[in-house]
Image 1: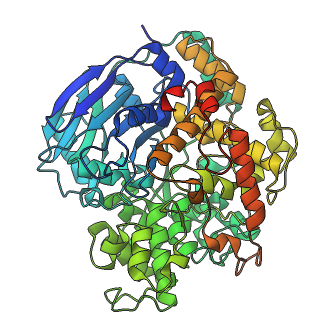
Image 2: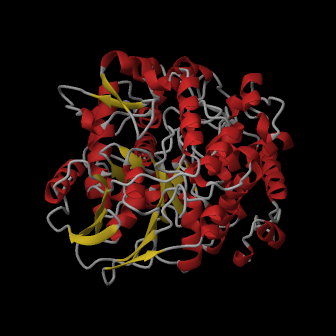
Length: 623
């Protein structure tokens, strides 16, 4: 009997509405662990190259890990993966909440979905069983209505539901998947993949608990996590992720006015401290977690924001705040709620709006193109209306819903210069001209730019931060602007570490360098849960495996080394803020990429993983 996992993967074919249960051998779990790494195994084996991301042939995978649903804090995250309609490459997005523990309790470790139903449907998974049910009465409804009706229909208010809103149904390429109305698998447009399959929701309920190899050790390690957590260390529980907004602005790394500047005069008004003092009504949490970092806000007239939809995280505050020149926190909270209601990724949606605002400023768009909206930076009403139009695919919103590359091409007149993206996906709100390692991460990330694939440079720039990372062979701090070989070496180690965290479904706020869980403590916990005689070396190879598998996925979809780059704006001087005039040196960045390829065991010209590297990782089947 497996420990920590069920040994069962649900296989769903919506073409003929059939359901099967796969029982893989233990080696599959030990080699891939779960999350996006396990998802890549299925995508690379079963999805034909050059498939249509919105066609029935695309494969959609929901995956936890071998430790999901066990008692320690921070194990609530899971991955959804498919070919991305937003980038055309590998699509993966993580979310927390309560959904993946419930799927594990229902008897399954992952779900692999193929085909397209001939009518709207939802999946109902419970106590080791699964069925496909009609969702015609749910199609077109917002998440709260959908969640309420499914729970009423199935007679259980504790059912956990991952679903899409109208944006996913209408195949908006920036659509996301939502669970509990506020936890989003946000990036790469996976809500549109779910919509393309006529799949409205996946409802899960289970009552079993996961067996573990060493229950006493699991309890001891879980207690140690809680006992060693210190809120003042990071303040993420008290102030949320947006606690960094004012600090970033002071440092000149708060993306402002579509990345033209790095400081925003309204930063304090939209930061975490202001939120906590004004509109915060509750600190939400995820399964088994004591950090309680989730925001739940309430706003009255004229916006009417309901706390059931949570509250804005840092990325959302920057998306609809500094990026759009807006310092009204209540309006930003309204935009966040609208994204959750329609099922939109807040990062891509905010980026699209700030991009459109710059195009309006430059005269590329006029009121005629914007359906009468005065799309100026700082126009709160226009920002909110455009979120709704993207969700409904109306007018300019319909163009933007197709993604930033499509919109830039349609606008023409030099609009491409203002579309800040990598591989077709808008850049998250961490300024790479002030954190150059982040820029390298954006360039090489297979999913397009992702701020959650590596710790950011400031953590490598202090003795205290380096001490936390010492088990990885990192001993000396490096300047945030450094882009030499040692920075690349550290980046690679941390990229693999972060991919391991994502694969295991461990929240970054509970693991070093941000939380109490030590790097070696992760190894101890995996051992205690599974009973495997694993090691840090073994687990890190899973993170490295993920990087290489995602790379292979993109290569076969037509991506090349030329796609490992940054928008021109980051190689140009910042126009304002504390770091005014700062830019990334293009030649130094190019050398860093070459060094990255060399250290990864990839061809330095093409970026293709060498045959020996794939064999060393047990991936020679991909050669």
